[in-house]
Image (cartoon, rainbow, N blue to C red; front, side, top):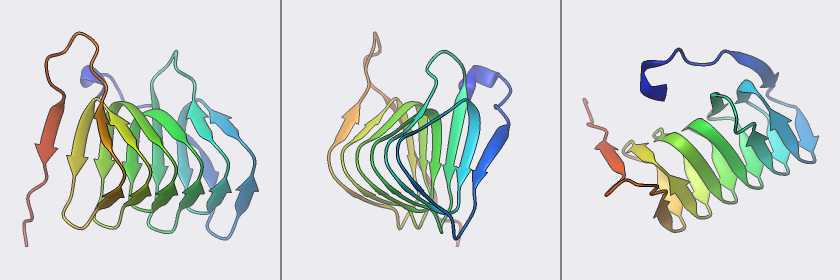
Length: 131
């Protein structure tokens, strides 16, 4: 992850039961346990991580380097480095990714679009079910 660089710290939290109406920009890391109605974007000039928990809901576009999703997103998803879809992840929108890890149970209702910049094929990692 991040080419063996240290993962950025999560400095912001939208708690369960909270709702943000409007666009949101962040740096470093953001965790969403509540609801956001608006676009969420990380600054492109530094490493970023966005975590949307099982309770998290977003209606709008999201963009970050590393996105870990176990909640619901209604809108396009842009993962510049890595997208991890955990078992309860739900996306209604197109997904743009460089590398993708998708666990059994995750659902995408949209088109997968690899971000290819000088790379022949994007990296795909299939998550094994260890049950």
